[in-house]
Amino acid sequence: MEFKKFKSELEASKYVAKIVIDKIKANSGIKLGLATGSTPVCLYAELAHDYKTNHTNWSQVKTFNLDEYDGVDYASDISYHKFMKDELFNHVNIDTNNTFFPEKECNFDKFIKEEGGIDLQILGIGVNGHIGFNEPGSTENSQTRIVDLTPITVEVNGNKYFDGELDKVPKKAISMGLETIMQSKQIILLAFGKCKEDAIKKLSDAKTFDINFPASILIKHPNVTIIYDEEINI
Ligand code: PGA
Image (cartoon, rainbow, N blue to C red):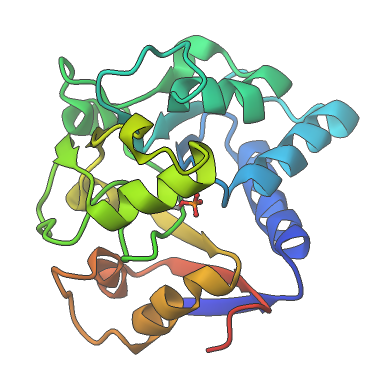
C-alpha cells in the first residue's frame, strides 16, 4: 500500500483525475469503480473540466458504483444515482446504459466478473473505516448485499447531507462487498480533512485484516494507493 500526501484536496484530485484520464485514453473500454460522498466531488469536477476542454472520450467507459441507499427513488435528491448524474455523468459523454449500480434483483458481483472486472476502483473511507458501505463486521468474502448502516455512519451522513435530521437518513443501503472491491485490478482510496485522520492512521498501522476496521483489508491488495491531504498528519 502506497501513501501519497498532497497539499490540498484540489491538488490530490487533479493528480487522480490525470490517472483516470490517462487510463481512459489507453483503454477506451475501461471499467471504473466509482464512489459517492463528499470525497470524490472535486475529482469528478476535474474529470468534467477535462471533458469540457480536452474531450476525453467516455463513450465506451463502463462504471460500477459501490453503493446506493436501500429503497430510495433513484431520481430523489438523496439518491447516489442522482449524485453521479449531477457530479459526473451529465458532464462527460458516457453512455448511461454503461453506468451500473448494485441492485437487489441483480447479481452485481457476477455481472462485474462477466464484464471483465474493475480496472480501477476509486474509494473513500468512513470515519469507522468503512469502504463502500461495508461497515465494521463485514467479512473478507462479503458480496453485494443489503447492509444496516451503523449509528456513526447515520450520524455523519445526517450531519453532512440531511441538516442533522437523522430520522431522514436511510438506515439501510445496498453495497458492493469487500471481496468484489478486492478483485479490482487497482484501487485508489481518497481521504481529505482532519475528520479522516484517525482512519488513515489506523489504515497505515494495519498489519492484518481487522473485521472491525474494514478498510484494513486493503493491505492484502497488491496495487493500492492512499491519497490524502495535509490536514491528515500520519
Ligand atoms: P464522504 O464519505 O466522502 O462523504 O466523507 C466517505 C465514506 O463514507 O465512504
